[in-house]
Image 1 (spheres, one colour):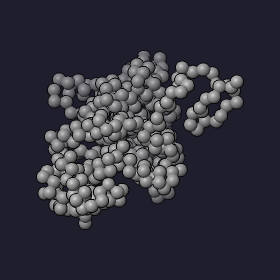
Image 2: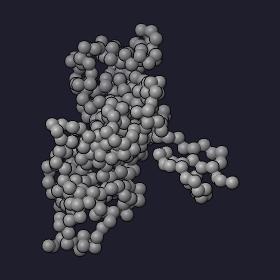
Image 3: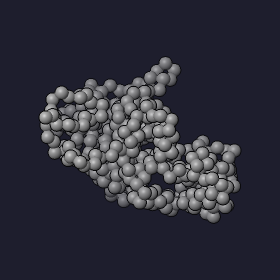
Length: 375
């Protein structure tokens, strides 16, 4: 009698009986739930003036309930475009985006509505994302009414007051009637965070959501978001340039480092921060200001990027796109495109760097170009 098994998503059925597997759930067990959001080989290509600009290339990542994934990298690395794909604000040119295992492109209207409520996006620029002709109360009331979470004016006022108090805009009655032009940048950003919380989302995508806030308010807000994650199971995709924030907020989660539209390193945040494997990740950490003069001198002596100039998306380098700036670049880096592989010295991390995952004897002898050894 043939054993009944479940095929992985997207794979073809097999006519042969499946072999017993230790990883297969036992009969009667509950299968693991699908991630809240999953990007599977997602790419986004923009067509500008007759040229193709690959803003995101073959990105695969997932975030489950109560998990946090931090996306870090320089401006133009594709972090925001990746977040927009996850939020359904843009459709991938290729690949798939799934919510709880369901492809966004195949959702019914009811499924799409549920997805829209469950996944909320906090935009980077509150000057552009807030409607200038709507008061704070109106901005927060619209989603509450649209999704039936506030039936009466009293319900709206109560919920608006709760949201403003949550983001430290107190007393709330002093802010609910204000318009965006009457508030500072930090206050606007807190209103944007409050709007993201209106529907009690299951996944929050925060794009530099604390960049304009004072340090004390920033820590308070991050602690509040951490409480949502730990106590209510809210998942997070958190985008930041600040590795200190990534370390603080995503210490119990994962960090993915992006460069020119690709993930070059991903793993548990403590390992990525304390033991970076990719030379780009190391360069980002070396760029963090160091108050200790001796440690700062050690960082400077350790080297850094060969160039501060980021290549254009319209004219990407061949092979590994990081090789023109990489202090470890070898000849093969100019010809072969690296893929994410497990780092030999850090099994929890995946790295897209051949020098790290597949070192050559010549590189250790210091004969490779850019390797730092004698010619």
